[in-house]
Length: 317
Image (cartoon, rainbow, N blue to C red; front, side, top):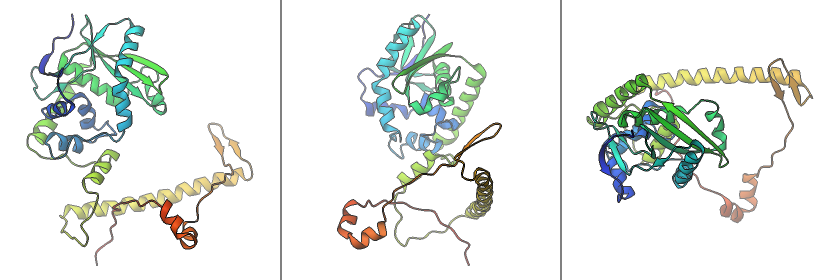
């Protein structure tokens, strides 16, 4: 018996722009991990901004990897079928949860004759350890549980091509407790944030940092504003953290120096549990000040202008 899922919209002749618009009508599988804080490429605030239409659907910061993931999807699906003996088929539709109509799924493949599906992935060689043994990265585990919640599937397979030369596939069983918690989390996000147009709190992830950088790349010269009282609390907390980091940095240097003293002229040392190295190495750098002074034309030709907005603060007098 295969999956019987509620179809929200066929995607057979749908353009990518149309597909992206339909994604705004609910929460999809990849959104689930972002909302839960397990997607380093996209934070909850970015998902919110996309859903309410305040920004276009953001291209992932790992856009090249995402592109090749789409290109290789058919290859990964075909290899999965060959290795597992299971037949798969496309489901060209945006699927919808029968009760929670904001809960959507655009699945890669369904398993023919079974109440199961397949998610196809590609991964960098640097991430191979995340796939060791029975482990599945949390972001993908949540994505698959989301799909099972929407479709009523008993299990979901995930197949991944790692570094272009290692193939792994695993079966993820339906976890009712996890699905229950995931639905509650997504429901709160949809009803309390999206429907009420109440943005979630910004977090400290790289995704949020990149998002703010893209939203506000430049400051208006000489512009000023009054900050709310909560800003003082944030600044006091930042000051405390700055002191703690300074203390930790000094402590770190102290421990490193003690080890350097023990190594002396030795390049490598062994303890009961660690290997320590203190190797000599050379690094060639360009004297930019001298180059600018003596070869200004060459300096201008090869120099690169970068823009940033560093956040600085000090106590007002």
